Structures are given as structure tokens and as C-alpha cells.
Amino acid sequence: MGFKRNSLCILPFILIIFANTVFAPPAKRNAQYAEQKLKRVRAALRGQKKNIPTAREILLDLAQNRAKDMKSSDICHVYVYLGYIEDLAGNRREAVGWYEKALTVKGPDIKWIRQLAEVGKNKPVTWIQHLDGGTKSKKSQPTKQSDWKKNIVERIGEGFVTRDRPPDDISPKMNLSKAEHLENFDILWEAIDRNYSFFEHKGIDWQKVKTHYRPKVEATRTTEEFYNLLYEFIRELKDFHSWLCNYREGLTLPRFSPRISTRLIEQKAVVVDVVENSKAYKAGLRPGSIIIEVDGLTVEEKIKKLQPQIRIYSSHRAFLENAYRSLLDGERRSDVTLKFLSPGETLPKIASLTRVQWRAQQPVEPDFPVMKKKFIWYGIHPSDYGYIRILSFNGRMEIADEFDKALEKLKNTPGLVIDIRENTGGFGTAQPRIVGRFLSRRTKVAVSYKKSGQGHTNLTKRDTYFVPTGNWQYTKPIVLITNVVTGSAADLFACYLISTGRPIAIGTTTHGNLTGVGVYVVLPCNLVVRVSNGYVCDASGKIIERNGNAPQIHAEPTIADILNGTDSVLERAVRSLQQKR
Picture 1 (tube, rainbow, N blue to C red):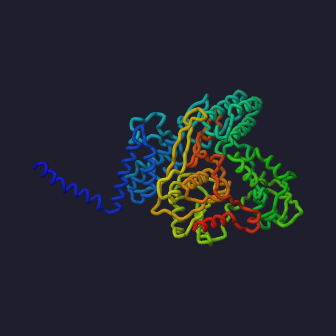
Picture 2 (picture 1 turned 45 degrees about the vertical axis):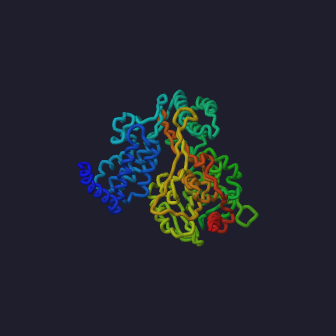
Picture 3 (picture 1 turned 90 degrees about the horizontal axis):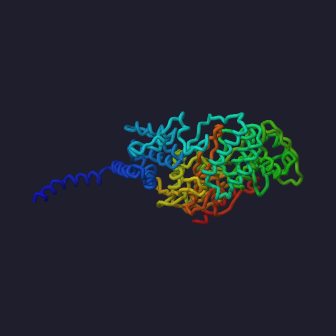
């Protein structure tokens, strides 16, 4: 009887707790739910054996779907934990994006976690007291900016490799001896040998490269010659994301032009933009004109001559696209002589022009009204389909904020075009939120690899999954438009979205410059070199670097488009949506 009496005494308290939970206001229930999820996250991240995939999935759900319902201290913790996870993975750009997001949170009881976000914004956070406790070591402690040299991955001779980008004010030493040339070259070769991730994928015989370049290093007479040779040496990696960070003296092509833009269209150098009433315009150059010669050289000969000064690209198609766009570039106030054909004419003309500081507007505005935000243009095409152009990923979560607002305005459209042509990349921070707007379930969107040992094939694998985001999902047909300029973070976005199976991909194959992560080699001479040490594949396992994201439907601009001011690629995208109805 005593047991029953005690049970009856406890029962009201159980009912009160049940009622407080089930019948609590929605906001309170959501806050309680978030607190429970944060407890799971802390359990998953505590100690040395962390369950990072589980923690990441929960945190992304909280950040993308429940931020408005959470206490300021809880959402601030969510953002900092996401930054911490990215720092542990060496994804510094993504980490900084989350720390910056944490610093936008205002409210009570967040002083300590905001201080950690401040630290994370400037330096990687790889140790948090309440998660790592006694596992802290001297190497994992956040360091001051002035102590960046201590936070290294490995030492090679008098040089070292670090995941942190060194300060921009470091200048390479000059007047090195020949012995120092050889010392720095050998350290750089070894650092790349241990850390570069694409030797197998790109078929690079790195030992053969060393055998080819070392005698050239021995023959260099000045440090300027030596650094110029290292510039050529790094180009052997055929990698857009590997470069000399703090030495470019005379190595790159000056970007001055005679107020004309050219592109590779139908295998010709075609003028796509001319300033009206300029000297070029008065000489007869018009959109649609075809360049035949530059300074007495054929277009192919001119590009070959310019090639050493044009930045290395991860794919030949991307190199050609950039080379044709740089065809008329050179020193400021220098002259260039063109032989060209005006539209509709058969006899070539000659024009002598002067290069000035000028760049054409990119991208070209569509011929229907669009609302222009910093990163997003959006509007309704005359066909009634929605249109969103992502200009750049050179922002963080504000890109997702702009995208959400655009999608809300286009909620009732029967289909949507997402246009990332001319988008050269930036950061991937906002992409889970954007792609999640088109998902109905947890979906695998990529596979990434990162160097984990000195051997060329020593890499660790990680699958990436996205979950539905936002208060509702856009379930109607979508088209993704890409071109060869689409690269880096834009290549990543294309990889993610195409891997979901949701869009029809239209356009041309993307650049294919998607390394994911990188390290920095700091040589004894203070030269800093970035080296890619990871890569990203689509959900099927195809490497995006060099290959790019290929469209299902090939479509590219024509000379007729330039002459008529039309966008046949966009029109092809709209027809694809109409066929889906």
C-alpha cells in the first residue's frame, strides 16, 4: 500500500511536467527542443572521440530552420560550434563565416561565447574548454596573430607548412645566394610532394618536374630570376588554387584595354562590348565584330605569346575563355593595332587604339525587370517563370538571406531558373541553406577528400549531406545555368545542386577549379605559396577539379546573340521548364 500511496503522490507532478511540455506555447516548446538538441551536440563533440557528422547535421538544422525560435545564447553557441567543426576540418573560410554570424547575435548571457567568436574570426579555434577539457595541448591552443608561425602543420628544413594564411605584409627576401635558391626550391618541392592532392588525378610526375627544374634553379643569377622560375614551377600543378601569394612582380598580365571586350564565341574572337563614341567605335568596331589579328599576330599566336602572363587555370577550356577575354590587355597607355571584320562586311579594317583602365559591366542585364541586391538579382521572366541570378559567393550568410527573400517573392511561379554564369566563386557558407530550399529529405550532395599523410594517395574521405531548410521548400521544376567561368565556390554550388537531382543543368561545363582546402608553405626566404591539399567530388564520386560540372543540355552564346542582344541560353532554359509542365 505504501508503494501505491507514494506513486499516487508522484503522479500529479508527472502530469504537471507533461502538461508544461505538451501544452507549452510553441515558442517555448521550440526553445526546449533546441536546448535538448544542443545537449546532444555537446555530447557528440565532447572529448577526443567526437561524432562530428551527427553534431554537424543537428547544428545545421538548428541554424537553418530554428534560429528565430532559439535563445540568443543558444543560437550563438550553434554558430560557434559550426565554426569550431570547420576549423577542426581545416575549412578556414567556412569557419570564419560562422564566427561572423555569431557576432551578429545580440542578447543577454552571450558575452563569453561572443568572445570565442571574436577569437575564431582571427584564428582557428580547435579547442573549447567545455568540450575538450583535459585534451588541450600547446599545439591546439589558439595563438595570437603575432605568433602565427607557431601554429604549423609540419616543418621541412627551415621552412614550414601551415593551414593559416600568413599575414599579407610578409615580403620575400631579396639578394639570396645560389645556395639559398637551391635550399628554398628543395623545401618547396618537398612540401608540395607531401601535401598536394592531385598528382594522381592530373597525371603529374613530380619527380620528373624536379629533375627538369633543379638545373634551372642552379643556373639562376638573381633572386628575381629565381622567383620568376618558381612562378613557372607552380604552374606545373595546373591548379587555379595554387599560387605564389606574395610575389607577382612583372609576372601577370596588366589589365588595361582599349574600351573593348572580347570573348571566344563559335571558335572566334568576337567583340561583345564597345563604348559608344570611343576611338574603337569610331574605327568601326561593334558588338559582333571578329578580331583577326592583334599587333600583326593571329589570335592564336597572340594567345600563345600572352600565355606565360595569364594565370594558370585548372582546365584548358577555362584558360581559353580567359585568354580570349584578355586578348587586348596590356600596359596602360600602350598602343594595340587590330585587324577585324565588322558585322556584315567581308573586307577587314585596321584600327590603332590605346589601352586605358576600363572593364565592361558583367554580367549583362536581362531584358526584363529584375530586383538587384548585392549578391542576388531576381525577377519574373515574361514566360512567368521565376529567375534568380547569383552574382557572386563573395559573402557569407547574407547571400542566403537575399536568396530566401527572392524565393519568397517567386514562391508561386511554376518553375525557376537559377543562373550562376560568370560567378567566379567566393565562400560556400550560405550554400547548405540555399540548396536546402529545394530538398524534401536529407540528401547526399558531395564527397570530399583531404590529405592525411605524406603519400600521394593518403587522403581521408567525408560524405556531405544537406537537409531541407526554411519554412517551406520550392518543389516545382528548376533549371541551373552555368558557363565555363562558373568556378571555385560557384563550382561547389553547381556540384551540390546537381547532385540533388533537382535541376536540369543547362549551359557549358564549368571551370572545374574545386580543391576544397589548402595549406600555405612558408619558405626560409619568406616566400608564401598556397598548395591545394584536398578536393571535392559530386555525390557519384566524380572529381570536379579539372572535369567541371557538365550540363545535361549544352547551350552557349552565338554571334547572332551578340548582334541581336539576345540570350539564347536563357531562352533554352525557359523552354526546358515549359516542357516539364
